[in-house]
Length: 127
Figure 1 (tube, rainbow, N blue to C red):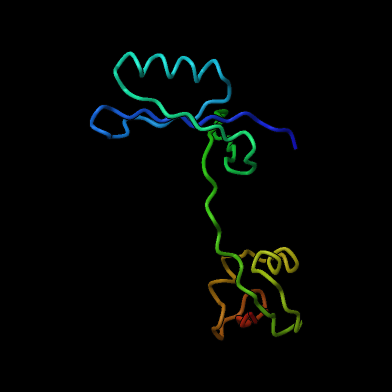
Figure 2 (cartoon, rainbow, N blue to C red):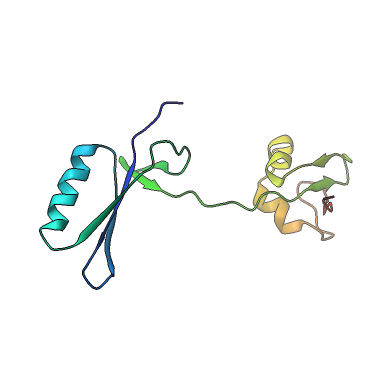
């Protein structure tokens, strides 16, 4: 994995309030940001995040690239299919193996309802 330069810059006014937070990918942009905010009498804090991987995820939406912090998904529920008697570590593993949407599996978990003829129960984790 290649190492991408990332700089998180924040501008703080003389009252101690953060007025801006920005992310830049080269030193020149950081210098311009610093010069612009220091001319407004704001102090600038620059953090180098180059060594951190998987902090930001690029999503392409209508041709534009956005950088967002990925959300922590709650798919780590251990489930068991009653028909196949197979136990899965996560709902995502179960959905990939059986070809059923993870949302549909979660919706019928611990109920008597079936999804495409399969019933699922939650398995307690040890430890």
